[in-house]
Length: 134
Image 1 (tube, helix red, strand yellow):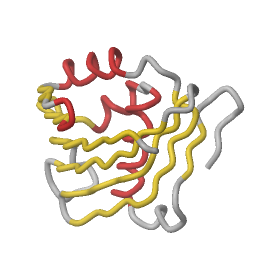
Image 2 (spheres, rainbow, N blue to C red):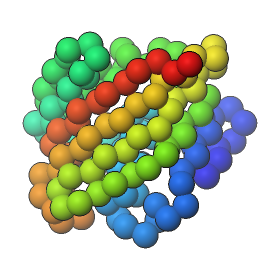
Image 3 (cartoon, rainbow, N blue to C red):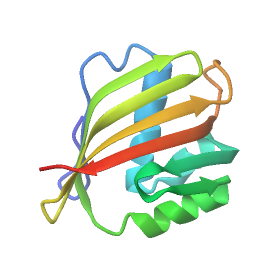
Image 4 (spheres, rainbow, N blue to C red):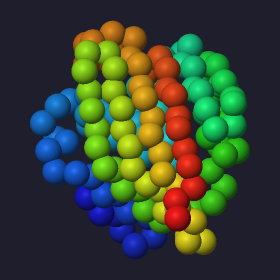
């Protein structure tokens, strides 16, 4: 899936459209990067906890989560490439690479926990692992 020239390019693997939870994880991850707050509000639980493990940070609550995103993503991300999305029950993981306009790349893996196994389950917890790419 590609965006218009002024927007971030999103590359997803084939086969990710066969499970609703996979689509939610992709949409939520892209919304975090693009700061699409309507999508984040739709899928995030009010008491969401986001662990940024590299920086030893724990962000608690939807308001703090959104505020942190507003402050964290100051660099323009040119491309978000997803390598895999794995879902099972109320858990999911997604990994890939973010490419920035300045040439920097960051490999990431986010592990999600949802409030329940239903499609309507909200994102309760995210553990984010990031490392600079070479």
